[in-house]
Image (cartoon, rainbow, N blue to C red; front, side, top):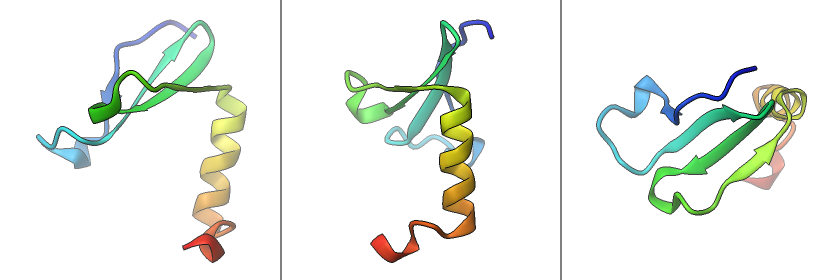
Length: 63
C-alpha cells in the first residue's frame, strides 16, 4: 500500500467539514477536515470490519 493524499467522498461536494481518508505506511488514516490535527490511524482490516458493522446496523442502538 502506497502513501496517498487526503481524499474525501465525492458526495461531500465543496463542503469543507467532512471525513477524509488516506493510506500512510500501510495504515489507513481518517480525519475531519475541520479538525485536521486529530488523526485516527487504523489497519485496513479493522476499518473494513467497522464499515461492515455500520452497514449491518450493529451500532444502530447507539443512535
